[in-house]
Length: 108
Image 1 (tube, rainbow, N blue to C red):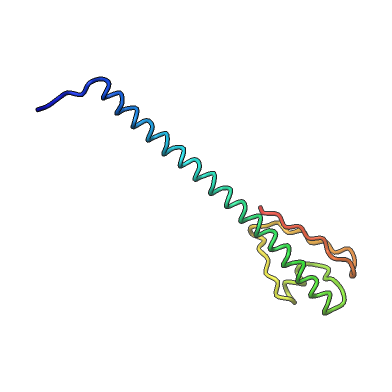
Image 2: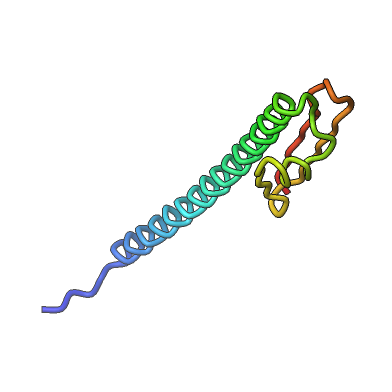
């Protein structure tokens, strides 16, 4: 036998759908924020790793040749350094042959 729904039953059903939609929307927003945070953390870690690699290659060059290289291109050409200038802005400044160069790597 058919029993029509009462207005209270209809209202409860509508409220449950609204709750589900709100919960799903909150989950999507939180997931997006977590993804963005993780992506930024990976980019920062990549920049730090690249800066460390540049300085290690410069120190190796100084140990072998007795002076720090004047440009980062020298490290790329002679010491096998691989840089990612597509994703990072790299600043390399060498003041003197016996002073560790200043290196800054910033994500684009």
